[in-house]
Image (cartoon, rainbow, N blue to C red; front, side, top):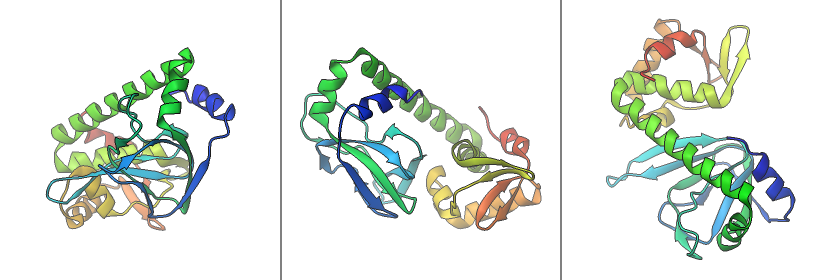
Length: 218
């Protein structure tokens, strides 16, 4: 998704920037809010809570992007669609009145195109994630999440690809709909035994990306 249009829009305005510290929530699912938030710097995680109280992680976001779905363009206040929590030491986010944002969108063909691309990206990501989770089983779901982490945080090294962000097995479980971190522990050990990954200072090093991909139905 090309963020140049969004960057140009933000540079033309002096929107306030809010700073949140690690593990602090920006919004909660269902909480009424009147703002659109755009990540400026840092790492955030989106998640939802199931009816039985379990958390299901959706995505990590670490680049300039709208981080709150926009819903309709008429309501001044709307329910937040998911939880947004800061995962880096701190995160900076642009805070824009949603009515003003929609007014600006409706007056700019370029911004309208960006919003359409944003919705399309969110839809495709959700459909792809659902397909991979449903068709791959638990082990494949863990491999799917590791691949997504590689895609988001992966850094090429001499030994493979380092996921340059600490992600616990509990968090991976929440991404995969697995009830216990111990199940993820066993699958991570299986990947270690296959010489596909190893841990380096609590970070995942992917030694053989093809092994990860072989266990995913794309």
